[in-house]
Image (tube, rainbow, N blue to C red; front, side):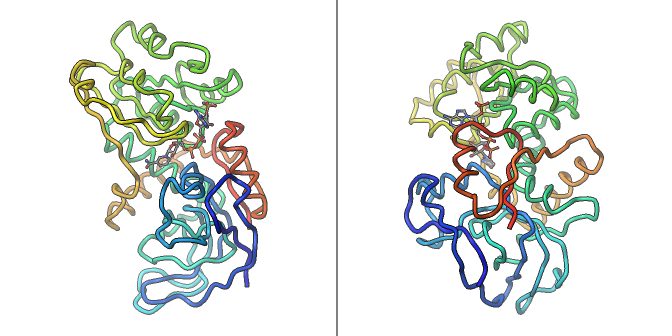
Length: 325
Ligand SMILES: NC(=O)c1ccc[n+]([C@@H]2O[C@H](COP(=O)([O-])OP(=O)(O)OC[C@H]3O[C@@H](n4cnc5c(N)ncnc54)[C@H](OP(=O)(O)O)[C@@H]3O)[C@@H](O)[C@H]2O)c1
């Protein structure tokens, strides 16, 4: 038996239950991983609340990101072996001392990447990679708006966007977070809880607005985010930390300047194994080069997963959070 954090019924952080579970031997195409660190992400709260359906029903082991050592491999697994250090993003099962998972979702970690770094960035960093390199190709001279710029995905978007030569504008919930966003590459910050952020973006850009808005906030930043985008620019709505955006009239995109809008998810961008490996490699390279650092600002023992969720949803965290089994 090993320790894990399970959800037996949907609800608030209190439904995260620390208990002992049985983890069997890996089946065909599976590996067994001894987790050294587990990533904490906003998506974990969506599964916990039932906003995203669990593919395995109830109960389920929470968590979608982690890193550890391979303990055993199942029949048919050829490219991963016992003892390999791996990082992964895969639906559920992450908050556990040991787990089974599909071998084709595991990525071997380069020597320079620690387990804690990997658990803090496989999901958030690969998300930043596809948002900056594929959803909208950010280049020298681009202007980008990053909401929640001091958050887990936010600090990576700011650093990487800056490294690509973009002007980075970040919105944040407090003065303290503004300092963190600036230290992570944001050229300008806006306190969006007190200020009209669209008016401020207009002022900062001299009316030119942004090429792309990366919006993981959802309900409370919509539709104002659209007013921050130049004609023919891109609205990348990649999350709902404040709740989902409600149905809207698509003509709004025309009146705001023939905008493009997308609701992307990492799963689609890394569905093919070659895309997973290429995305992870790009992330490992930019982190190894020192251009992007992964701040692990909250570290909890596995048994305190409920506190980790409470802190994340209470806007009390910055950078990445991890659980240590
Ligand atoms: N689509 C994808 O592929 C993908 C992948 C990864 C993450 N995401 C999304 O990206 C977003 C960020 O994820 P994360 O794990 O890095 O979280 P995070 O940004 O570290 O935490 C969420 C932040 O959102 C801000 N926020 C604004 N309104 C909020 C509200 N009503 N309640 C709580 N927080 C609020 C807070 O920052 P301030 O205090 O500065 O406002 C808070 O710290 C989430 O929406 C997540 O679902 C999407």
